[in-house]
Image 1: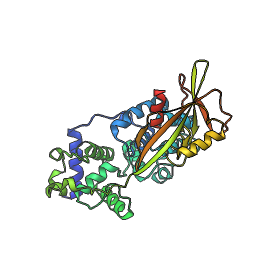
Image 2: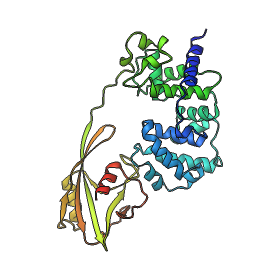
Image 3: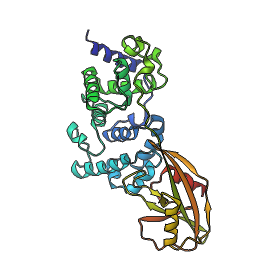
Image 4: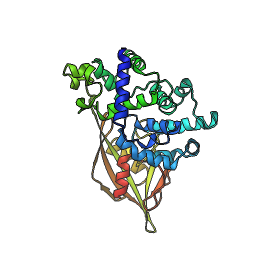
Length: 349
């Protein structure tokens, strides 16, 4: 009997026997729900995504409502989830689908891949999980299963074309003729719950008998551990401008450019050094205003170990300042996207 057929049969039998509780986006599935969940799940764990997804789908139950929304509101709902390019691409794609496809997702793979933020795996997920079309998925969970099953000397995050080509070829070969949606979902569930990164439960795995990593007692050697990037240590100084008028406290926040970290979110004015901050204060005649050094914050980004040094400065009147920003009312917060450390600081204020 064909080994690929045996593989897919074992996966489907496991899926039917140990039926996993449906996640929110798997109930009454639509292409919109699948797309939204797949974008959120990129580089983010399921348990983190559930709350964000449920809040997002309540506010934007249809792609038409998402397309009509202001980007600031989308970033507000995305705040804390990280990798904000995903949210901006979500908005772009929603607008394209509404304007060019009458609000209906294209059912063509190439048209889907051409949309912002949708790669081969996301397109495959939308078409296979929702419509049972014959397309594989290659997320990190499935990559990990394949690398262990075949003992492939690959890093999980490796993006070399030859590596991905091998994994795509294997995922296509293993795809059954029928029950595509069930098979793809089962593979993702198996990787998420059984063939996990740090504590795989091999005794509960349906692939145990033929898994090369298990048979050679090398499960923990696969996938290969990529040498960690050296964390860049960076310190920034944030200026917290507080204006108190008529028992109302307002804080000045600037909208960041879409390049770099926290793109498109609102943040306190940022400076690379105390000297640059003092120059700015002198320029705006604020150098004599009373100020307080607030407790420093530590924040980790993908490869940056960030130390944040906030300085609180009291104002008597609003600045005559033209930079793109708002006066954030602490008692009546506006709907805008905020980086997590900024949100924490505002709550304390």
